[in-house]
Image (cartoon, rainbow, N blue to C red; front, side, top):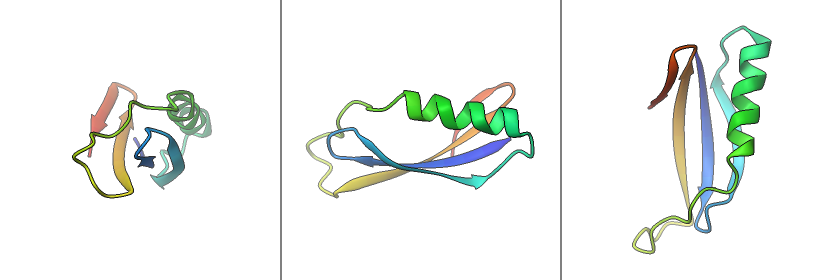
Length: 68
């Protein structure tokens, strides 16, 4: 299991990506990082969300993705 955190800006751009926990399998962790990086940009944040960015934790397991 890998836990990665992303910082999403108002326009949907992912400005930061970091691991909160690595799985210990470098191939799996590299794949997780590349998948998140490839998803950039995401859709813009809702206009009602007034903060400058949103941090989101994602849990990746060999069985799939979970949101933390």
